[in-house]
Amino acid sequence: MNLPTTKQLRYFVALEQHKHFSKAAKACFVSQPAFSAAIRELESTLNAQLVDRTNKSVTITSIGKDIAVQARLVLRDLEGLVDIAQGNQEPLSGQLKLGVIPTIAPFLLPKLLPRLRKSYPDLQLYLQEDMTDRVYENLMEGDLDVILIALPYDLRSVETMRLFKDPFYLACRKDTSLIDPEHYAIEQVPAESILLLEDGHCLRDHALAACKIRNLNKVSNITASSLLTLIQMVDADLGITFLPEMAEDSAMLKSTQVKTWPMRAGSYREIGLVWRKGSMRADEFKLLGEFIKKHRTSNNA
Image (cartoon, rainbow, N blue to C red):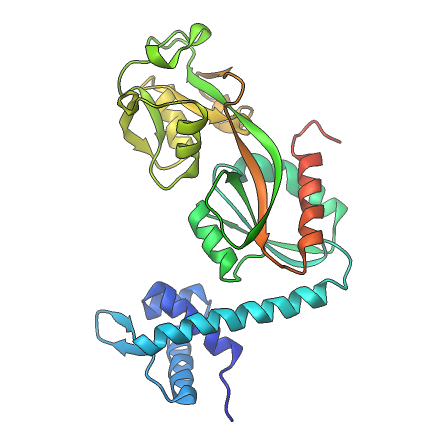
């Protein structure tokens, strides 16, 4: 019996995800002709048409969708074999694929990675920075081993290690005329003067919940796609915002006139590590979590 190869299954899963041969081939770091040939070989091996091809679009057939589901399960089982093998190695050695969200990565990783390399020189760390929904999806599909995200977030079939609280700070231009930051009250904020990230960034939802912003008339319809843009808008005194504590000493603020003020107790998000439930590397991920907790600030030895 001829069986599909791991490569063919991985390529088909990418095609089902991207719905585009060129984009899927690029994601798999292979030329499009080689990618297309592998998909045809898979169809021949299975004796089934997995894809309807036209000049403008790619449509996955009904049986193709079923095959994609099973292919993901097969690839995840293969990841499990690797987990078992790596379980016999020294902890935090070998390959580790870590997903991190953009409102954590630029603040935590520059402090953390040099110490991680020094303490675990045999660790081959691969990083992916993306929004929470995408790193979570990649985790569940086996493309990532563990993700570092902000909580709360709706997660299923995972184990979560809560690492630390990241308080929110009120941020505005130091000479702003919009509010008195020393005597701040959410009720006194002018309408449409709270600037936040665009929908899709969990920091937006966390700020709304943690900072008790219930009157959405206070929130501007103008949003930012990144923290850097958000800070620049606040620096121009277009509004105020709420930044996580880990951003307070970042280079993004040092070249601006933006200042921060502590918020009331309870205004925070939590940072946590998340991995697939039942992973054989759970103990290793917990070790990584303890390392992050210990070395997350630049003042720690």
